Image (tube, rainbow, N blue to C red):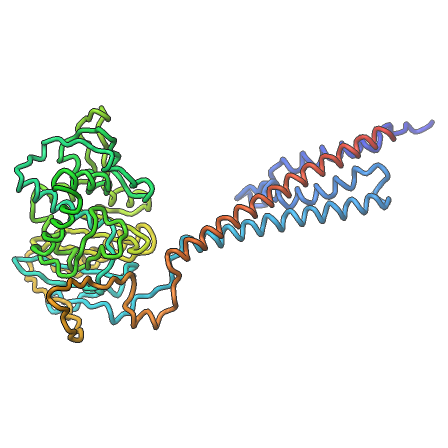
Length: 486
């Protein structure tokens, strides 16, 4: 009796084999102890590349011994390796680029520039604190005494970004009191109040031309979202012109005892002569805190304005301390209030306050490189104070940080106004000892080049992927036509 012949054709056998392999890939294999289940699909990439190359060669109708099969297997392996190499290179480049964009520069603050005072005759320690800022002042107001507990280049003139708006707030409120303007009185926005702010990438509260709203809401819009448009509106309506308002700001700075501050605009946008110090900013924040109405503004975390003719629902304003904390996952409850700021020339700045019993502690910093590092610095200093502060009701004596001795210099002639020289990082002597850092302009150019290169590499890799897919599809079609022909 003749044995029944197998009627399965070679190509059908291959298809059955593939289906069997597919079922194998879809199952899950328990381990011997049944403690965990390992899916075969977890090795998808390796299995897929092996099967991809094997299937391409097995589809050749002439058999694996034919020269075309060997050539196909070799070509497929080469294409697989090329694609994997391009993708790995892309991932490596993007990770490197991301780290370079987000990492802080290796600029260390020399320890001899940081000076601390004493709490109950014990030196205040910041050994467990890693400061990201390059200038800082920690000032304590207690029973009429003023003690600078931390001095990190507090008297160096620097760019303070939107901390300038604290001066704008102080001068605006003083002019309103002088002119008898009630905070509920309304004011209307003009086109000049908004001109050029978008091009300068300035922060705004969102005013519109022709919008009418109370002065109180404008003051909140100046401080909470750091609105440059609000500052323009206040300067235009409370003084004869913008220049007169700036002059009033500088006069108020002198009356407050700000010894090294000079203001040239209401927003803090970069201008070479728009300068102050951390010591002066601490004095200015204290002046705001002493006025109850202004203290309410700088300590408010969120505020909704009254409805306006342009916004029936009003403006919803959130303090930049809160928004930065939410974006960076930082708890800001330790900060009682204050003002943030940021420029390429100043880094991330912050002036904040908190009370410890009867003591008011004010911290001012500039020079943090990454967003949120200013908040981290203030939280870390407040935590250090909390640990070293004596219990409530215990005796408390404070001693200030040692003053920095500077060589005497000849004063300029009385008819010449000499502006302080700006510093945006360490002093000149210390800069010579540290590795040079690229300027903000050079860094911007380098970042642009890096972005363009990353985009080109991404386009090339995608192009290679598409070409491989199209070529493989074409080869599959040709093999199918050859199979049908044979």
